[in-house]
Image (spheres, rainbow, N blue to C red):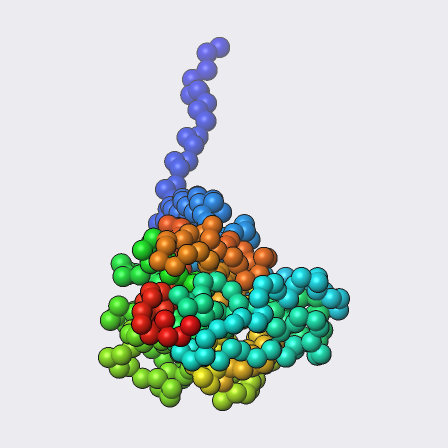
Length: 411
């Protein structure tokens, strides 16, 4: 019997619901964020890879990574890692340096009287009684046409605890030499500058030495003036290296010891003075003080450098490993500085080189010698096109490189 019941038809499936506006935009936001994240990660990866092969970022991979991190907004992380590392890996205590750690070369040089600053006195060791040869000054680098040494170097143990580590010092006669600030595309940035690396053959003809300047400008808490331009505002009260147009270098406090005049050629500021009025600055051991920088703690023992001025106008540079801010200041004070300041820190940036060779003849890195053999890079960095940080040079004054009636009388 044929049925008249209609064939069963299953119910129609419900039509898909369109996503709400919230879900729609959330999905797209996730896609956008994921895409941007991949792009940023890719960019940072390429950028880091470039930094790790870039010599201007430092000699070691760790230094290059740290410089890259600070440039890309990770400065706080880099500083924390460095402080943790140095805190967990303090320098060795005790011990004695090698027998040849206190320098070589002439210690007594027959020089004409007059026309130069008196030779420096032996530096008392911060570690206690001087060992044989410790703190004794040795003539180094080019001398004047009449044989007067323009620089002397000396070496002392860094403190009474870390007695196997040695810091180097260089004493400079500002009456025989003129100073020059070389500015870099990275520090201070900008340019072009009249004087920038590499040192030219002509500028090297009577070059005596070259040495590092201060922190990156973001960390220096100070200003920068050169070529008649203020690149960073000069801070009143800041520790300052001032070079006058006659080539004389001086160290002091801006606004008290120096103000801007037509005679000022360059000003490089870096933090606050660590020695003032022949006394250690107060609070050098204060771990919370930012007067002497925030990139590495004041009491952390690392490679550091500094510069100071004696009462007679001589300039002294000091640099070496396992130094706190206070021990660096103590070394400069013991060398006779009435005012002194910190320069750059960490292994890759503390560098002092002296140069030898006939006067009025170009030199290059092969004619140079580092103050300490363990200093990173070397004299060649100042003649390299990749050098993009600022530094100082000391060059014999013209009248000290040619024979004149006056120089003949000195003999």
